[in-house]
Amino acid sequence: MTLILCHCVLNVNARAPGIALWNGVIKPIYDVLKANKISFMQLPCPEASYLGLRRWWFVKEQYDNALYRDYCREMLIGFSEILLENNIREFKVIGLGISPSCGYRETQSDESWGGRPREIDVTKNVKQGSGVWIEILEEVFRNYGFNFDIYDLPPPLIYPGKRHIGTSKYPQTYEDSLRELCEKLGYSYEKLPIKNYHLKEVDTDLRSKKILLAPLEFALKFNDTLDKYVEDGFGLILIPRSNVMTHERRILLDAFVRQIENHIKVGHQVFLHEDDGGSKLFQELLKLLEEKSLLEAIPHV
Image 1 (cartoon, rainbow, N blue to C red):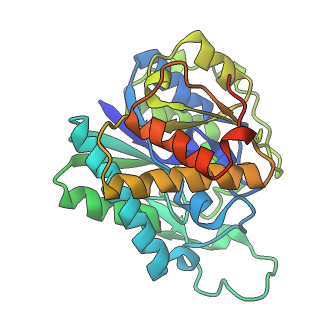
Image 2: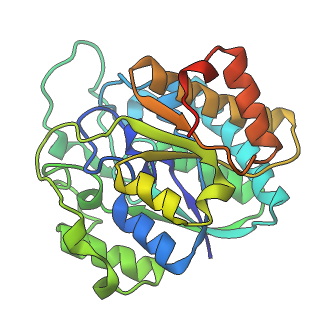
């Protein structure tokens, strides 16, 4: 089984401020990936590259515009080409419940959002249906003939506070959410190191603002070096393997570069791991970062 992970699963630093329950990666997912040595690929974050890291909490209607949809479609076409290059035609997509982009069962939706900022009851704007990114993803992946299904993580595994209130398609407790996750990924709930998670049920910004940038090949080794970064609260930006550069792949690469630039602009610390060299796509990423004078701001580790 190969998993295609929406970006924040391994890098909650890309989320808007105040809606991250974890410091770097969503730890239960990482633990299951590592325990079962599951092959995976990480998508870029369309929101972080499109609007940056100082964006407001949004609803679907605010992302549901022609430019954002076209931007998502172009990225996903490039990603699809890389899937074909790596002979990946069957997989499971992991989304993020109630996200206006990455939600699948339900999403945050309210046509009244817009204009002057005001206090909003976020428990009353949840509706059935997918976010914009997932809608476009389904369209593009089906056009490519991929065999896939989609599972979005329950909100209690993602958000601090009571953001799951108002949902009807997800488990309502943290424990039940973990059980559902294990069931969907074929893992024993009893094997999860739950006592190590140290959850904080507070409505605050728990993001570490530390990110490790690396080739995907490094992460798939699941070695002690990667574990150390995860335990230290780092989020991960993992560039997929591709040795063919096309217009579509270039657009996808540009999205990763924009996201990295946006992280740096708000003071997030990005560190580069390149011991493995990486594929041509990763080397092109480094060239683009250097051209934009960003590489000098990224320590090599």
